Amino acid sequence: MSRILMLALTVMTALTAGDETPPAPTTVPVPAWSDLTDWLNGGAKGVSVVTLTPAGDQVLIGLPDRGLFASNDARKTWMPLGKDQAELTKKSWPCQVLFDPNDANSFWLASRTGAGLFATTDGGVTLTRVGNLEAISRAGIDVSDPKKKLLVVCRAEKERDLSRSINGGSFSKIGNKLPEQLLPITQVVVIDAKTWLVATGLPPAPNPKKKKEQEREAGIYRTDDAGASWLRCHKEGVGDAVLQRADRSLWWSVAGGERLLRSSNQGRTWTPVEGPTTCPTELPHGWIAAVKERQVMVSTNNGKLWQPLGPELPFFPAGILYAAKFNCLLAWRAPEMAGTEALVRFDLPEDLTTVIEVPPVRDLLVWNGDEEAKGGGWLWPEQAPMVKPAPAATAARVGKMGLAMHIEGVANGGFGWNWFGWFPKEAGSDVSAYEALVFSIRVDGAAKPTALRVQVKSNDNKGTAEVDLVPLYPSICDGRWHEVSVPLTTLRAGGQFNPATAWELAFNVSAPTAMTCDINVDEVGFTKTAKK
Image 1 (tube, rainbow, N blue to C red):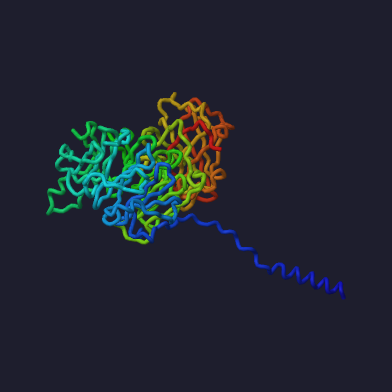
Image 2: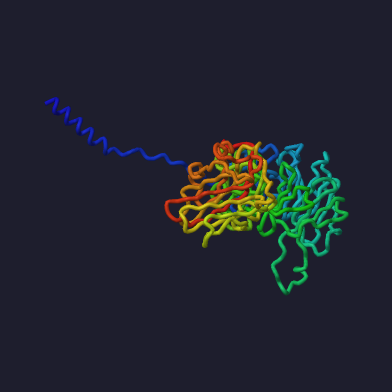
């Protein structure tokens, strides 16, 4: 009986073991923006300014009619600054904080309503009013002066309302040399004692009844002689405060959120930057982040290429800011915008390259449709409705043009682009010293290739070995742009290619059945460092 009982127990155990509930699968938390809104101090009404102390160990925020608050953890713990200044806590709209780079305890605070300018030398414990101007939109300080005596401020209430102080507080108007038809000034940047920038905002909406207002000019103006004369260096007004990067370049967003502008010569000239449109901020490694509608975008190559970072924001932000010590992004909603959340935080991974792809550097750029735009294409079989490679604006990943081609009705096909256009016959790029072929590619359509082979040809029509990109990049045909890097040692493992006279990129595509797809290629080049 004991053996029968033991057998029965063994059978029952085996049967019931399969009925056990399996452990719950491990869930990976989805990255999200966390709410830091200071409900206690009225922060839900919106945040008018956010900045970091020079050491980056404290976050400061401005709340209309509430004043300035500080946090040591970039979370929900906030303490008021300048509590003894009634003008700051009852009738104010903090809009800018300017720090002394040589003294972390000294900064200036501008307010667009009520008393216009305050200063502190004790980290904000006490804030003292500077001068008697009210409603200052923006201030600039010559930080190169050890005594910080030069202050330049603007007020957006009146035309050409620009004032200067050369003794740290007593102001006189100096806007009379600006054009009479200029729109109100909303931004000031002091580069040094004599070089300043001022900018207007958005022109008024068309109104036939107010013709004089329609004739007023927007723009960015620059002076090299402390306001004695001004030169218009850009015809559009700006929105956000300027971003002054570590490389000394200046970034502004066009008023109305149409595009970003970049200047590499202290504001003399401005170049449009395609992609996101507002809120530029600097990231580690020389990267830059900005916003397109509610999506944060990141560029690793000075604005040539942008990639999304994280989920969309819960509101259209007035600004974003990278806080290195807390390894996060902060974003805030302006008081003019309705909403509940007003300040949010997005925590970043320690290694940003885990969420942002770093495109390979093109040490030798052979085609990008812009500065390198020569060449000609071929297609096989060349039959309708197939379209051989040709420059097209819709095919650009970076800049204005990329290569577009269409494959349809065949199971096997080929195409290529010769970046010299096959002329002269002795032309060619010497790629002997380079490690990898690099380019951007996008494949989309109803019937995509299952094999996508690439090779490089020299001017004697001899090619390298063909390398299939699909096993190397399994998602390459997902309709999105991909950065491709193929080691030249792999390509040169076969064929009779002459690396001293490279001049053509060729593709061979195939699928079990007829394909219908569009293929775009951009930024073709070679790099001296192969991707690992």
